[in-house]
Structure formats: structure tokens, C-alpha cells
Length: 119
Image (cartoon, rainbow, N blue to C red; front, side, top):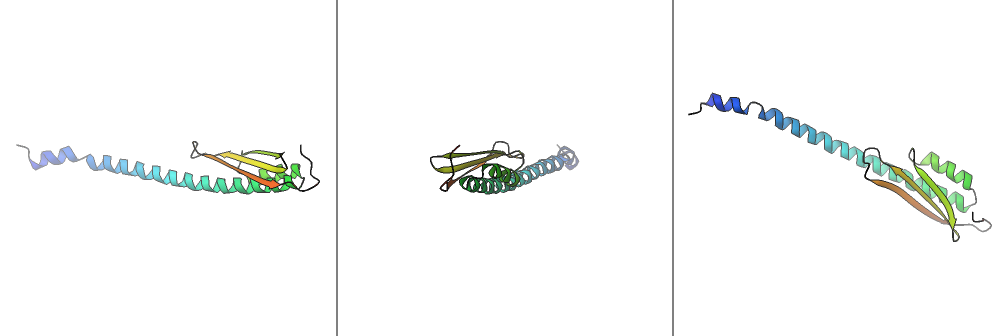
């Protein structure tokens, strides 16, 4: 027959293990939430950068468009601008550091003003 003392000794480490698992779960959820907030922030910056780049290219200021987009976009973002069929197209893409599987990009299109040449 087991005494009460024997049962207590068998259960001594259970609370420690449960607390460690709970703590690890909480840390994981917090990191994922922070990563989500950062990804949304990066998405907003990509949208703003693409919009400004498309607007400036549509006005004929390609050099200023890329420089402005680089200032607005997240660090190490890729920026491409071109004129296609009378429309200025700007694409800004970036990688999230905390959520590497999430693609963050934005595309903006603006009608090219008269007198602006393709190329």
C-alpha cells in the first residue's frame, strides 16, 4: 500500500514541468503577436512607398520616385518602377524578420500624365 508521502514524492516535479510548458507557450504567443504587428506596420510602409513611387513616376520623376520609396519603405525592401501601357506601376516588397514565411509587398498604379515618356 502506498502512503501519502510516496504519492507526494512522485508528483513533486509536475508543477515545474507544467509551468515551464506554460511559460514557453506564452512567450511563443507574444513573439507571434509582435511579429504580426510588425508585419502589418511593414505592409503599411510598403503601401505608402508604392503609392508615392507610382505617383512620382506618373509625373515623370523616376529618380525621385525610387529615392522617396527607399526612404518610406522598410529597410532592405526591393523597389521596382516601370511604365506599362500608359500606367506607372510601382512594386515594393520586403521580408519580415520575425515571420519569414510571410510575404509583404504592395503594388500601386497611377495614370501617366501627358508628356511623360515610357522607358
